[in-house]
Length: 223
Image (cartoon, rainbow, N blue to C red; front, top):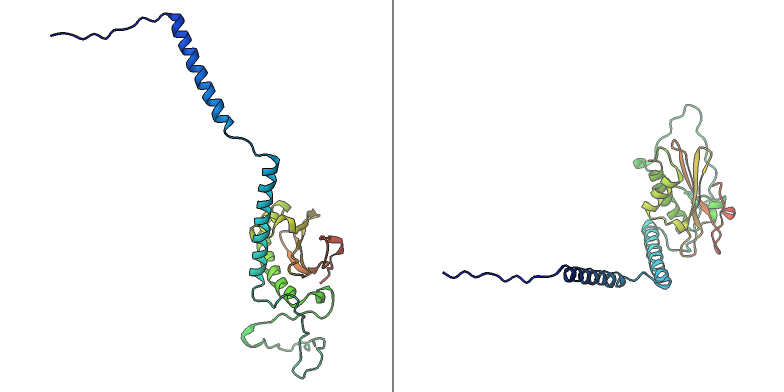
């Protein structure tokens, strides 16, 4: 039986080193080609990306505002003062005499009464209605924080849909964290004024200028 033997070609050490060098050079060239295919974004491309992200946030914020105010009157609707059964102008509430029993309203529900004086009276029907909804949702969320540091409050507000561009004056003041949210929309003047210290959370509607950039100093508080 014939046996087949593989013929091995002798290669001198110098040739072997040259082949290794060529292989390493080829691999390095491939690596450089791959890296060169991933070009970094130009300043213009980064700007367009940032604009797209900002536009998406604005759209989501506007959608949230519409959702909160979905059952409120149309923008610009003027509020009417609460009417009495006789049609006369409303009068100040009368305190019951000491020891008297106060009967709750039918069904136990208490409807909020629109203010007739003070800064909040400047809000139209939509802003006043939406303000009540925003007050409740923000107060309930922030009150869950045992130690409401500014960063934690911002995170909670962002989670509710309030974007950073609309959150102003968020800072620690003594033992409390204060913040103001610009909720102006569709010509409205609504804003929220909030304070939280872990034990007490207060969120009230406030009135912002109708036009121009948001300025905390010009906000009407004390509602």
